[in-house]
Image 1: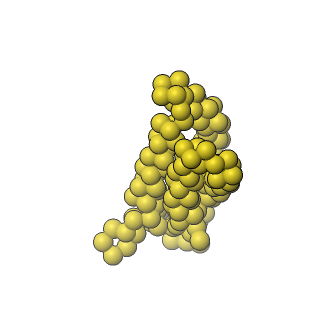
Image 2: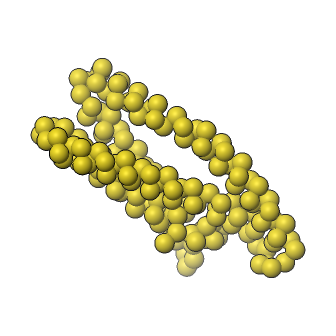
Amino acid sequence: MGGARVTLWNFVAMAGAVLLVGYGLSVHNFALFFGSYMLLVASTGVGNGSTYRMIPAIFRAKATAGLAKGTEAYEAAAIVGRRNAAAAVGIISAIGAYGGFFINRGFGSSIAATGGAGAALTAFALFYAACFVLTWACYLRKVGAGTVPSLAAARI
């Protein structure tokens, strides 16, 4: 299916799950809240995997853009793409490790400011919507008759 498509639709699942979490809280239904939260956690894992699937494909596509496959120049560029992808994965992982911290802080700030988690859940849903748009615009949209040229191979 490709990392970009899975990531795109996973943001829809995450936004839906976070809205269900909020609904479960508002109607005081523990089973709905718990099931929705488990769906949110599971979809977070799917999104993590699909995003890490995209990284090497994006760096390979950018490094080898315009080069004929099977040539010496293509192979050299592919090596550079793999090296850059490895560095990016390290940096992205380090930044991503703050996610657990920011989610907890978001809930804490929301509860302190409003007395409930609704503001944090709304912010998370809006963030997932923005990520959906960004993923579509950068990796899946069509430009004219074809895909965005430098990232077309990243759709694999």
